[in-house]
Image (cartoon, rainbow, N blue to C red; front, side, top):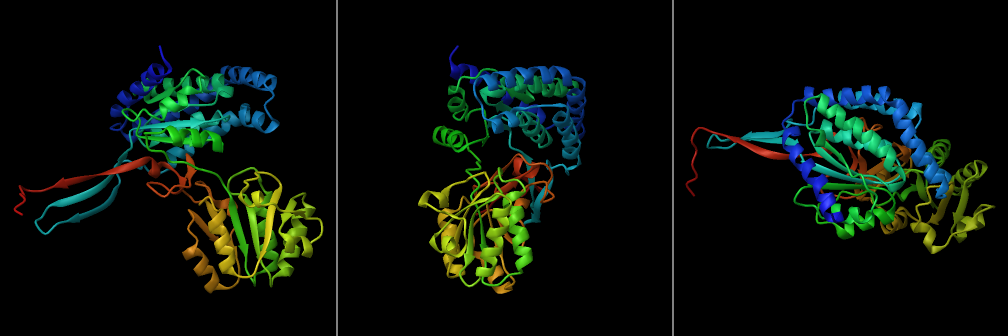
Length: 418
């Protein structure tokens, strides 16, 4: 059997299951999620044995410590998955909600109603927790899921996939509401991206190379998180203590995530803020890669290269540039943005409003840490990803973003006459 045929077999099963799942009640969908949490706890030893095999192979293959940490499952992480399922069930049901409704002059009543997308393909790397997180969000929104995790987590993903399938079956739903591709051939990614007869959407989660591979091969619609490249502009005047704290939190709290700041622009008339912010970061161990003026004004900076301004470090490194105006800062932000998150720190309300209006990113902030770009922090519940696209979903994606809509029209015999 070819790779195409094998992937098609998984996709077709998920497609068939989707027609049942999309009409399932919220109670039935929740029953599947409740049972998933129960099985995560009951099968903890089995799941951890599977993960131990992946960890051993990952160490033998020379995976980095960061990759091994993402791969690792333990009792605490499994319990967090189970608790997250209860939190997902607290999210209002996205299926069947009335988005808009109106009545035409002829008495025809029209409703725009949220419905599941159908089958969502998730392609991801390293983190086996995505198997539970992604599939459970899709179930909540009435969607079947086809999962293709990284080869380094194959045993963990299959063990977790079995939990999900058994839970669906216990709730009276098809096991194929969740399908996990059980082989590691990389060609499966390209084949999955072309399964538009079965898949309605693909969400790739991983590095730039994976996302490019999916986008370049896809005939299925893709919603992607291209990269972070979060940026901050410190204006001519600002609350100094607050600005130091905000930049510190945006960089240091968790530098290896997409909403951690990578480029910082500081107005040339606010050298006090520049020195205070950079000194604070250096004391915490952040390497500053500065423009010539930054290096002149603050000791201990490394001269920045052109590549630095487009580098998502995901590390304790920050590029810093002195600018002469907010216009210059916004031009640079537009030049280097990934469209995810940008912030302005200022006490000038007019400048803040202009920045929020004109900067074209999914999330824009005034005097708030960039670390809040997150579905949970926005009060949306769990997220399946953060989109840097503009069509269908933008920013943190929770269960509402996993639905589309249809028009439901009711009448009393109306006919069109023109």
